[in-house]
Image (cartoon, rainbow, N blue to C red; front, side, top):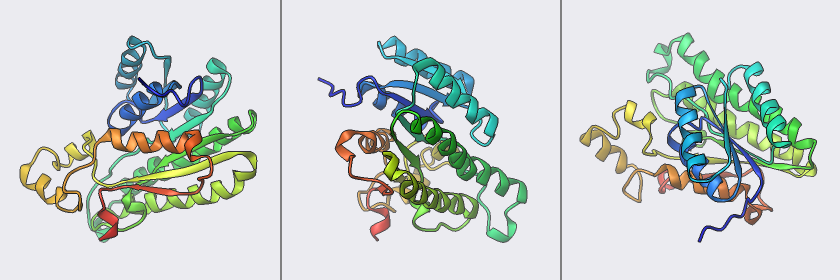
Length: 255
């Protein structure tokens, strides 16, 4: 029997069309939340909503590019207009960017990664917090990465953005603790997602084995494991936790 610890709450998931986002949409729905699925890919996001509502869950889709303030503002307005409030947000939308040495990293690629992965999180929190303040509080989880804690060669933009996400998380957690808004982050390692597949880490046996061996637990993570951590951080069970970067990394960072 499912424990619906978020029964009736309104949960927003950005990047909800696939990977960790899709897993999070399922997890929040199973916990009893009404889910707002947002993604830049309208077809993928709409498909997620159909799957959730087909299982008797309550969900809606709102297309948004999180790097655009107008899109994010519309997303929060649409959520509030439909459900009356916003209780939970999982700021998950992100892109991997190109892999290149820092001196070779193109300005265009850098700007795009920072716009989506860092500015996108800032914009989401800006409008989410404004809505949560109207209703006495809420819980926000930002999807950072192990690269918010450590570095990785050839991933300067992604690493910089994710370090920035953890910085934003800590500052916002301090600023809004007295307003009963808890703000945390999850820091996944290599998770079996379409993003990893595009880089060949799940489809190439040699690359896969090499990446699996980077984790003491000896495998890739599953989207459902990250989603479970996000749901827990938003639940009453984590009511005394804020500003925390929760590693979901199979032991990657302890080495």
